[in-house]
Length: 342
Image (cartoon, rainbow, N blue to C red; front, top):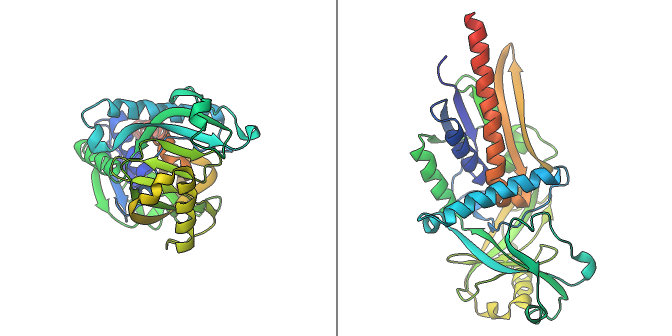
């Protein structure tokens, strides 16, 4: 049979990384095309802070989440140790996660994957007079859009075709492709009618404050300061079921004030830019195979969406699993072709 034709729908972080991993795992076994209406810098991923601090999915076993995070951390570690680190926007950053109450402190499942995880010393805690406990560690920060553009470059080098196209129904692709990989993010709510998927609106500030070198994250995850290569991300909000993409001036002031209370030097930050994104959230990442059928025709589908606030922390791990599922689909197609010849 001819090489299977694979379409990946969506060009955010998940779509790009999934298409790349499919190409790496199945070299010369299939043709791959990436389809999306929007590309960087106009994706939700471009708004994301890009810190590797995992979000917990209540519907996904912890050991699975840990494996996704470990694979992602290991992948970014290799990039950071290469001559492509700067172009990819990948760098290590050290800092603190701080708590006001001892009852809120727990050792996270990812503590043995990040570097140098330990309780904060009394001397370090003096920097945060309103907080009594904390954890120090080193992790990765991915800067966007450089990382997305680097992934696009890698895709092209691996022979992946990239086309601008709005897909409104996966079935419309069945005559052109044998396997469709759904990485549509929040768009999957309409694309496949997933009512378990909902937006969590996030508003952040991107500021110029090059003297800020360490990340600071309040234990509840709502207030954070994440220094990147060129700009510092200040956050944030988690507004469930809000579809508003326009910035809210009151929210901007609230975020800035909260971050300045943790790092007073931010009062002198300049060139404040406000960004809004809709995190594609559900109780667990949808990562599974499905067979669509109409009138005797079939279309093999692999879903990989619903990463919510934690996409950067697990993107390579879920791409790995999705690529494995695509490999199973390719094997199934080749098996049915062989039986047809008999």
